[in-house]
Image (cartoon, rainbow, N blue to C red; front, side, top):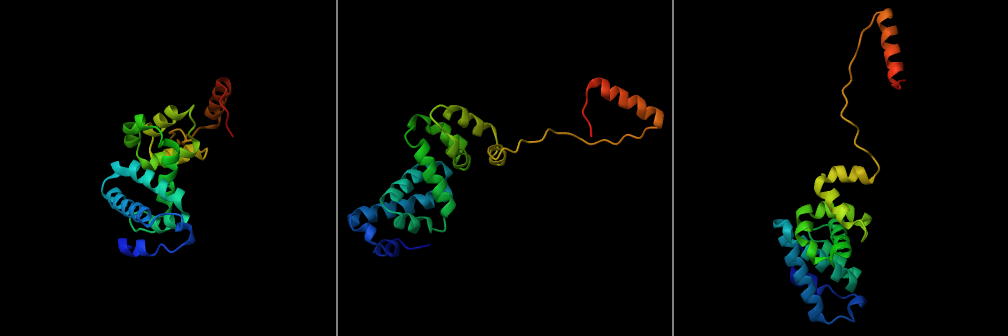
Length: 172
């Protein structure tokens, strides 16, 4: 893991000239502290999401330094910032967001609008992350079917096919 002092002293980018050193130090320290908490307690993901989004607003350089932490990673950092962009202004939904979890929220966030937020949260609450991914990709879960093998005499096969035709069953 990058030490806090090494991360703070490495801020030599021109993007930081407009920021006060204490602001940068505070953001970095808060981010590292929250990232470690996130790896131990998933209930804190809304706070780290907000902090990461603040850091990203300030500077992409600093954001890249933070998601380089072994406890976070690039994909998770972008998931969390997207979660804060979509759900950050809705503190009244905090309990529901925590119960859904950040993995599922990260999956549904790109599809959420003001009109469908409750429906999307209910959708995510009822499904696994894998089911959500498949649904969003347009892959419907196939019905649970079981193959059977039937052996007919020629006469039995003719009767069977007539019954299938009468029921309107499509076959290939």
